Image (cartoon, rainbow, N blue to C red):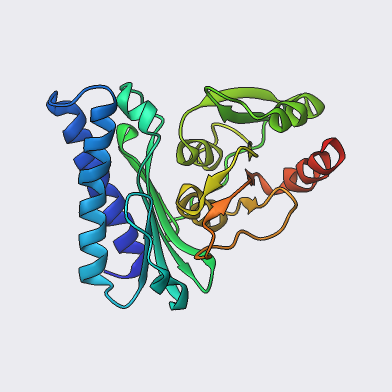
Length: 243
C-alpha cells in the first residue's frame, strides 16, 4: 500500500474495532472510551511501526518521543477523536490518521465509523454547491465566543457538533461551510482533517491565516479554520477585527 492507501486502511480498521468495542456491551461510560481508545491505538501504533519503521510517530494515546523531531516524515494519529460522543452512542466522532511531511499535512484519512465513511486525501470529491446562509459548526458543549461573534457578523447558522474531525469533515461533506475553533487543540486533533480538507480544495489555516505546521516540539495548536475557499478572507478579516 502507498501512504494514502495505508492511512485510509488504518483509519477504517481502527473505526471497525471501535464499533465492535461499543457494540459488545462489555464497557460503559468513561470505561467505554478508554477501552476503545486503547484498542484502536494498539492497532495503529503496531501497524505503523511495522509498515513504516523509519518514520516518526505521534499519537494522542502514546508517550511522545523526541526522536520524531528529526524525521522528515511523521505519522500523526488520533485513535478516537470525540470520546464523549463515542461513549454516548452518537455518530459525530472520528479516527484520524495523517502523515506530515516536512511539517506539512500532506497525506491523511478521517474515518467516520458510525457513518460508514472514510474521507481521504487521494480521493477528493467535488465541492458541494454554495448555500445562501452559511452554516458554522461549533462545539456541542462550549462554543467559542469568537465563533459566535463571527457567525453573528456573517449571519451564519450555528450547528453544534462533536469531535474536531466530525466538524471539519462536515465542511468537506457539504453539511456546513465554516469550522472556526479557538479553544485549543493538539496536532492529532487537526492534522488528518486539515490534510483531507486541503486535498478536497478547502481552506485550512490558523486563524491569523498562517499555515498549519505539524511535528513540532510543542504539539499544542491554539486555533484552526477550515472553510470553503471563497469565505476564507472574510472570516479571517472578521476574526482580526473582532479579536
